[in-house]
Length: 96
Image 1 (cartoon, rainbow, N blue to C red):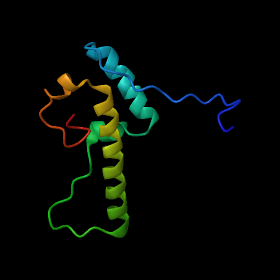
Image 2 (image 1 turned 90 degrees about the vertical axis):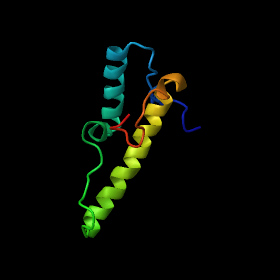
Image 3 (image 1 turned 180 degrees about the vertical axis):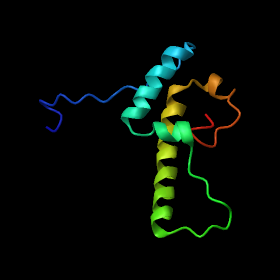
Image 4 (image 1 turned 135 degrees about the vertical axis):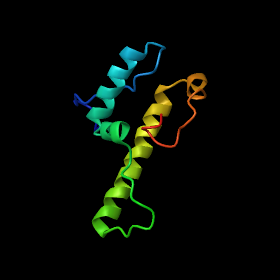
């Protein structure tokens, strides 16, 4: 069996329990370990409307969008529904 004898432990997503400072520290560490924290700090790269992107830029942008969706998924799982409903902008991980 694949998991037998393995020491790998799936990290638990820290749930927000109304102690923001503690939760934010845990969540930042969790997202850094997944290499997603840059999206929370900086957001998705924005290009001026009408800019022709190179193949490399387009690939990087698609990668950022996918990582942002994954980051949002973690945040949605970590924040209780009642609290999440008070957050007005939920379009990107940075907004949340």
